[in-house]
Image (cartoon, rainbow, N blue to C red):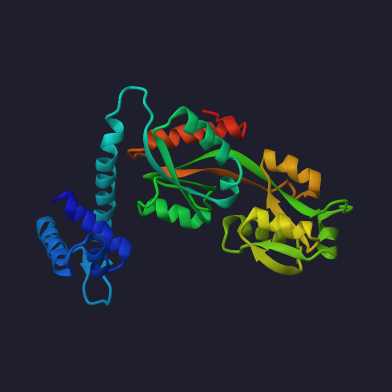
Length: 296
Protein backbone atom coordinates (compact mmCIF):
# COMPACT_ATOMS: atom_id res chain seq x y z
CA UNK A 1 0.00 0.00 0.00
CA UNK A 2 1.51 3.33 -1.08
CA UNK A 3 0.71 6.94 -0.30
CA UNK A 4 -0.06 7.40 -3.99
CA UNK A 5 -2.76 4.74 -3.81
CA UNK A 6 -4.31 6.42 -0.78
CA UNK A 7 -4.24 9.76 -2.62
CA UNK A 8 -6.07 8.12 -5.53
CA UNK A 9 -8.73 6.70 -3.22
CA UNK A 10 -9.37 10.07 -1.59
CA UNK A 11 -9.46 11.79 -4.99
CA UNK A 12 -12.15 9.37 -6.21
CA UNK A 13 -14.24 10.07 -3.11
CA UNK A 14 -13.79 13.82 -3.50
CA UNK A 15 -14.30 14.06 -7.29
CA UNK A 16 -17.06 11.47 -7.59
CA UNK A 17 -15.66 9.27 -10.36
CA UNK A 18 -12.56 7.38 -11.49
CA UNK A 19 -12.33 9.57 -14.60
CA UNK A 20 -12.51 12.86 -12.66
CA UNK A 21 -9.94 11.59 -10.15
CA UNK A 22 -7.62 10.55 -12.97
CA UNK A 23 -7.92 13.97 -14.61
CA UNK A 24 -7.26 15.70 -11.26
CA UNK A 25 -4.15 13.61 -10.59
CA UNK A 26 -2.81 13.64 -14.15
CA UNK A 27 -3.26 9.89 -14.63
CA UNK A 28 -5.17 7.68 -17.04
CA UNK A 29 -8.44 6.17 -15.93
CA UNK A 30 -7.03 2.68 -16.44
CA UNK A 31 -4.11 3.50 -14.11
CA UNK A 32 -6.53 4.65 -11.42
CA UNK A 33 -8.65 1.52 -11.83
CA UNK A 34 -5.57 -0.69 -11.59
CA UNK A 35 -4.40 1.01 -8.38
CA UNK A 36 -7.80 0.48 -6.75
CA UNK A 37 -7.89 -3.14 -7.93
CA UNK A 38 -4.44 -3.74 -6.41
CA UNK A 39 -5.51 -2.10 -3.16
CA UNK A 40 -8.61 -4.28 -2.91
CA UNK A 41 -6.51 -7.40 -3.55
CA UNK A 42 -4.00 -6.34 -0.91
CA UNK A 43 -6.72 -5.71 1.69
CA UNK A 44 -8.74 -8.72 0.52
CA UNK A 45 -11.99 -6.71 0.49
CA UNK A 46 -14.01 -4.81 -2.08
CA UNK A 47 -14.09 -1.06 -1.47
CA UNK A 48 -16.76 0.00 -3.98
CA UNK A 49 -20.25 -1.18 -4.80
CA UNK A 50 -20.23 -2.45 -8.36
CA UNK A 51 -22.95 -1.84 -10.93
CA UNK A 52 -23.80 1.83 -10.44
CA UNK A 53 -23.12 4.70 -12.80
CA UNK A 54 -20.68 6.31 -10.38
CA UNK A 55 -18.38 4.65 -7.83
CA UNK A 56 -19.91 4.36 -4.39
CA UNK A 57 -17.87 3.30 -1.39
CA UNK A 58 -19.25 0.42 0.65
CA UNK A 59 -18.80 0.10 4.43
CA UNK A 60 -15.25 -1.25 4.08
CA UNK A 61 -14.42 1.46 1.58
CA UNK A 62 -15.62 4.21 3.89
CA UNK A 63 -13.48 2.84 6.71
CA UNK A 64 -10.39 2.65 4.48
CA UNK A 65 -11.10 6.19 3.21
CA UNK A 66 -11.24 7.52 6.78
CA UNK A 67 -7.91 5.87 7.62
CA UNK A 68 -6.39 7.04 4.34
CA UNK A 69 -7.26 10.65 5.15
CA UNK A 70 -5.70 10.31 8.59
CA UNK A 71 -2.50 8.81 7.15
CA UNK A 72 -2.21 11.52 4.48
CA UNK A 73 -2.87 14.26 7.03
CA UNK A 74 -0.11 12.91 9.27
CA UNK A 75 2.26 12.68 6.31
CA UNK A 76 1.47 16.25 5.21
CA UNK A 77 2.04 17.51 8.75
CA UNK A 78 5.46 15.94 9.31
CA UNK A 79 7.30 18.98 7.93
CA UNK A 80 5.38 21.30 10.23
CA UNK A 81 6.32 19.19 13.23
CA UNK A 82 10.03 19.07 12.32
CA UNK A 83 10.64 22.72 13.15
CA UNK A 84 12.87 24.32 15.81
CA UNK A 85 11.36 24.30 19.28
CA UNK A 86 8.90 27.11 19.83
CA UNK A 87 8.56 28.01 16.13
CA UNK A 88 5.03 28.36 14.79
CA UNK A 89 4.78 27.75 11.05
CA UNK A 90 2.71 26.01 8.44
CA UNK A 91 -0.44 26.38 6.37
CA UNK A 92 -3.81 26.03 8.08
CA UNK A 93 -7.02 25.64 6.07
CA UNK A 94 -9.84 27.05 8.18
CA UNK A 95 -13.57 27.16 7.53
CA UNK A 96 -15.45 30.17 8.93
CA UNK A 97 -19.10 31.17 9.22
CA UNK A 98 -19.74 34.72 7.92
CA UNK A 99 -20.41 36.31 11.32
CA UNK A 100 -17.00 35.16 12.58
CA UNK A 101 -15.27 36.17 9.36
CA UNK A 102 -16.50 39.74 9.77
CA UNK A 103 -16.32 39.68 13.57
CA UNK A 104 -13.55 38.54 15.92
CA UNK A 105 -11.37 36.60 13.47
CA UNK A 106 -9.66 39.42 11.46
CA UNK A 107 -8.02 41.10 14.49
CA UNK A 108 -6.92 37.67 15.75
CA UNK A 109 -5.30 36.78 12.43
CA UNK A 110 -3.73 40.24 12.26
CA UNK A 111 -2.00 39.77 15.61
CA UNK A 112 -0.87 36.24 14.78
CA UNK A 113 0.50 37.33 11.41
CA UNK A 114 2.72 39.93 13.08
CA UNK A 115 3.86 37.42 15.68
CA UNK A 116 4.38 34.40 13.41
CA UNK A 117 5.42 35.36 9.88
CA UNK A 118 5.61 31.72 8.77
CA UNK A 119 2.01 30.97 9.76
CA UNK A 120 -0.37 31.09 6.80
CA UNK A 121 -4.14 30.68 7.16
CA UNK A 122 -6.38 29.91 4.19
CA UNK A 123 -10.03 30.80 4.83
CA UNK A 124 -13.20 29.28 3.39
CA UNK A 125 -16.53 30.88 4.22
CA UNK A 126 -19.77 28.91 4.48
CA UNK A 127 -22.65 27.82 6.69
CA UNK A 128 -21.91 25.66 9.72
CA UNK A 129 -23.37 22.41 8.37
CA UNK A 130 -21.33 22.58 5.16
CA UNK A 131 -18.11 23.47 6.99
CA UNK A 132 -18.53 20.55 9.41
CA UNK A 133 -18.93 18.23 6.42
CA UNK A 134 -15.77 19.66 4.85
CA UNK A 135 -13.83 18.98 8.06
CA UNK A 136 -15.06 15.39 8.16
CA UNK A 137 -14.15 14.87 4.51
CA UNK A 138 -10.62 16.14 5.15
CA UNK A 139 -10.90 19.30 3.04
CA UNK A 140 -10.52 21.61 6.05
CA UNK A 141 -8.20 21.36 9.06
CA UNK A 142 -10.86 22.93 11.30
CA UNK A 143 -13.92 25.16 11.14
CA UNK A 144 -15.30 28.00 13.25
CA UNK A 145 -19.02 27.22 13.49
CA UNK A 146 -22.03 27.51 15.71
CA UNK A 147 -22.65 24.62 18.09
CA UNK A 148 -23.73 21.50 16.16
CA UNK A 149 -27.33 20.39 16.78
CA UNK A 150 -26.08 16.85 17.40
CA UNK A 151 -23.78 15.07 19.82
CA UNK A 152 -20.19 15.40 18.61
CA UNK A 153 -18.54 12.01 18.88
CA UNK A 154 -15.06 10.62 18.35
CA UNK A 155 -12.83 11.24 16.51
CA UNK A 156 -14.15 14.84 16.38
CA UNK A 157 -14.47 17.60 18.95
CA UNK A 158 -16.15 20.99 19.24
CA UNK A 159 -14.77 23.63 21.62
CA UNK A 160 -16.61 26.89 22.22
CA UNK A 161 -14.95 30.26 22.56
CA UNK A 162 -17.95 32.63 22.75
CA UNK A 163 -21.65 32.85 23.56
CA UNK A 164 -23.85 35.18 21.52
CA UNK A 165 -27.31 36.28 22.75
CA UNK A 166 -30.14 36.83 20.25
CA UNK A 167 -31.92 40.18 19.92
CA UNK A 168 -34.87 41.47 17.96
CA UNK A 169 -33.33 44.26 15.89
CA UNK A 170 -35.74 47.05 14.92
CA UNK A 171 -35.28 50.50 13.34
CA UNK A 172 -33.82 53.14 15.62
CA UNK A 173 -36.25 54.80 18.07
CA UNK A 174 -38.80 52.00 17.77
CA UNK A 175 -40.81 51.67 20.97
CA UNK A 176 -40.37 48.01 21.91
CA UNK A 177 -43.17 47.28 24.36
CA UNK A 178 -42.89 43.53 23.71
CA UNK A 179 -41.50 41.07 21.21
CA UNK A 180 -45.04 40.01 20.26
CA UNK A 181 -46.04 43.58 19.34
CA UNK A 182 -42.88 44.05 17.29
CA UNK A 183 -43.82 41.05 15.17
CA UNK A 184 -47.38 42.36 14.83
CA UNK A 185 -46.23 45.74 13.52
CA UNK A 186 -43.23 44.79 11.36
CA UNK A 187 -42.49 42.28 8.60
CA UNK A 188 -39.87 39.69 9.51
CA UNK A 189 -36.49 39.45 7.81
CA UNK A 190 -35.81 35.77 8.37
CA UNK A 191 -32.62 33.77 8.83
CA UNK A 192 -32.00 31.14 6.16
CA UNK A 193 -34.09 28.16 7.31
CA UNK A 194 -31.27 25.78 6.41
CA UNK A 195 -28.84 27.53 8.77
CA UNK A 196 -28.53 26.26 12.35
CA UNK A 197 -29.21 29.76 13.71
CA UNK A 198 -32.40 29.91 11.63
CA UNK A 199 -33.61 26.68 13.19
CA UNK A 200 -32.98 28.08 16.67
CA UNK A 201 -35.00 31.20 15.91
CA UNK A 202 -37.85 29.25 14.32
CA UNK A 203 -38.02 26.94 17.32
CA UNK A 204 -38.30 29.86 19.72
CA UNK A 205 -40.96 31.59 17.62
CA UNK A 206 -42.98 28.38 17.60
CA UNK A 207 -42.58 28.00 21.37
CA UNK A 208 -43.87 31.56 21.90
CA UNK A 209 -46.76 31.12 19.49
CA UNK A 210 -45.52 33.94 17.23
CA UNK A 211 -46.42 33.78 13.55
CA UNK A 212 -44.32 36.43 11.79
CA UNK A 213 -44.98 38.08 8.45
CA UNK A 214 -42.02 36.98 6.33
CA UNK A 215 -40.59 39.23 3.63
CA UNK A 216 -37.25 37.65 2.75
CA UNK A 217 -34.55 35.30 3.96
CA UNK A 218 -30.86 36.02 4.50
CA UNK A 219 -27.74 34.13 5.52
CA UNK A 220 -25.55 36.99 6.72
CA UNK A 221 -25.73 39.36 9.66
CA UNK A 222 -24.73 42.34 7.54
CA UNK A 223 -27.62 41.75 5.13
CA UNK A 224 -30.11 41.57 7.98
CA UNK A 225 -28.94 44.78 9.62
CA UNK A 226 -28.92 46.65 6.29
CA UNK A 227 -32.52 45.65 5.57
CA UNK A 228 -33.67 46.68 9.03
CA UNK A 229 -31.81 49.98 8.74
CA UNK A 230 -33.77 50.71 5.58
CA UNK A 231 -37.03 50.15 7.46
CA UNK A 232 -37.91 46.93 5.66
CA UNK A 233 -38.71 45.00 8.81
CA UNK A 234 -37.23 43.48 11.95
CA UNK A 235 -34.72 40.67 12.33
CA UNK A 236 -33.65 38.27 15.05
CA UNK A 237 -29.88 38.00 15.10
CA UNK A 238 -27.11 36.87 17.46
CA UNK A 239 -24.78 39.64 18.60
CA UNK A 240 -21.37 39.20 20.18
CA UNK A 241 -20.07 41.86 22.58
CA UNK A 242 -18.45 44.00 19.90
CA UNK A 243 -21.43 43.91 17.54
CA UNK A 244 -23.82 44.57 20.42
CA UNK A 245 -22.09 47.88 21.20
CA UNK A 246 -22.19 48.93 17.56
CA UNK A 247 -25.77 47.84 16.94
CA UNK A 248 -27.01 49.68 20.02
CA UNK A 249 -26.02 52.97 18.37
CA UNK A 250 -28.07 52.39 15.23
CA UNK A 251 -31.00 50.13 16.18
CA UNK A 252 -33.53 49.40 18.88
CA UNK A 253 -32.64 46.07 20.49
CA UNK A 254 -34.94 43.78 22.44
CA UNK A 255 -33.78 40.49 24.03
CA UNK A 256 -35.34 37.53 22.23
CA UNK A 257 -36.69 34.54 24.12
CA UNK A 258 -37.49 33.72 27.73
CA UNK A 259 -34.87 33.03 28.92
CA UNK A 260 -32.96 34.92 26.25
CA UNK A 261 -31.96 32.67 23.36
CA UNK A 262 -28.22 32.24 22.91
CA UNK A 263 -25.92 30.32 20.61
CA UNK A 264 -22.40 29.07 21.19
CA UNK A 265 -19.62 29.62 18.68
CA UNK A 266 -16.60 27.37 18.60
CA UNK A 267 -14.13 25.27 16.64
CA UNK A 268 -14.93 21.91 15.06
CA UNK A 269 -12.02 19.61 14.27
CA UNK A 270 -10.60 16.15 14.71
CA UNK A 271 -9.23 15.49 18.16
CA UNK A 272 -5.94 14.43 16.61
CA UNK A 273 -4.48 15.93 13.46
CA UNK A 274 -1.08 17.33 12.45
CA UNK A 275 -2.11 21.00 12.70
CA UNK A 276 -3.70 20.78 16.12
CA UNK A 277 -1.06 23.11 17.55
CA UNK A 278 -2.04 25.79 15.03
CA UNK A 279 -5.78 25.43 15.63
CA UNK A 280 -5.17 25.53 19.37
CA UNK A 281 -3.30 28.81 18.95
CA UNK A 282 -6.17 30.39 17.03
CA UNK A 283 -8.74 29.07 19.51
CA UNK A 284 -6.83 30.57 22.43
CA UNK A 285 -6.58 33.94 20.68
CA UNK A 286 -10.30 33.92 19.89
CA UNK A 287 -11.07 33.33 23.57
CA UNK A 288 -8.98 36.38 24.42
CA UNK A 289 -10.60 38.49 21.70
CA UNK A 290 -14.10 37.55 22.85
CA UNK A 291 -13.17 37.81 26.55
CA UNK A 292 -14.36 34.24 27.01
CA UNK A 293 -13.11 32.19 29.95
CA UNK A 294 -12.72 28.47 29.35
CA UNK A 295 -13.47 26.52 32.52
CA UNK A 296 -11.41 23.35 32.80
